Image 1 (cartoon, one colour):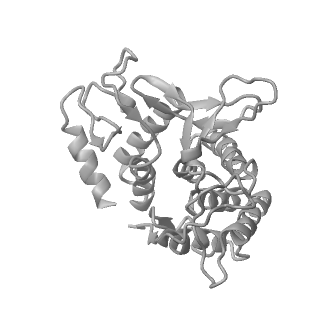
Image 2 (cartoon, one colour; image 1 turned 60 degrees about the vertical axis):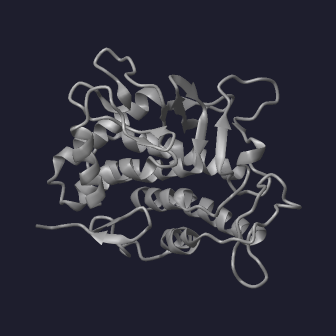
Image 3 (cartoon, rainbow, N blue to C red; image 1 turned 30 degrees about the vertical axis):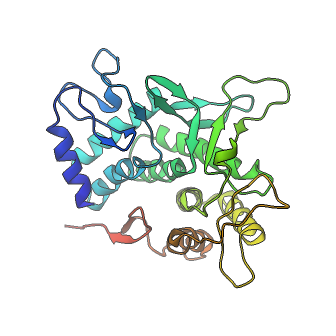
Amino acid sequence: MQAIEASRKTLRKSEPNKLTSSGSSLTVTFSPNVRLWGETNSGQFSHLGVFTLGARADSYYEYLLKQWIQSGKKENSFLEDYMQAIEGVKKNLLRKSEPNKLTFIGELSHGHFSPKMDHLVCFLPGTLALGAHNGITSDHMEIAVALMETCYQMYRQMETGLSPEISHFLLHASQGSKDIDVKPADRHNLLRPETVESLFYLYRFTGDTKYQDWGWEILQNFNKYTRVPSGGYTSINNVQNPTSPEPRDKMESFFLGETLKYLFLLFSDDVDLLNLDKFVFNTEAHPLPVWTS
């Protein structure tokens, strides 16, 4: 998490109207007169680019909150930046789909809203719930619960019961339309952990066993469509074809290090196991102790 502090210091020294870039994804500026998401005080964007909570941007926002928590809630500049980030999300990226009003997080691409949500963004329900548990405004928990439902539906609405890598949400309903549309290039599943990670947080903080039930469904579908006879698991190319999901013969390390770990914690009877008041998890699911002094 030291990298987050270094990034913040660099960003705060940035010139007005200049954003950091990672590949094609522009993330955030912290120059004195430019707010998060490149907003000026007039509400206009100071730079065109891609604004996302998905690939190459997600961990930064997660660590703002977690660094504050790990510091024993003493490093308030992290909290301030996190709160500013979430306000930017609520204002610019938070939408509801049609026809079933699923809450989702889209992207801003060159000044235009795109109803595109990476599976990676499903870290956010857990992060918002963690913030609410630590005393942040209660509407963060309300958003977390709504987003958690959406992330679950990204699984449930697919023929295999497994989420695609990227989902597009309908903003205008038509007869017979579904909320979630999947493009052919995006229908693969890499055994990612973000949804079950957030299920773990929501279950810990609410005690609602439906989150365990949802996790169990996901695990059963991993077993049905991605487990191989030799004992491992594989990514698949097509979550919409249960008869031929097209195994890739590749298991990412995060499936063992994160996905299965969060499922284990979700199903554990010991609610004090890795107590979330005593530990924070980094983005690779390694527990780090909260500093008490």
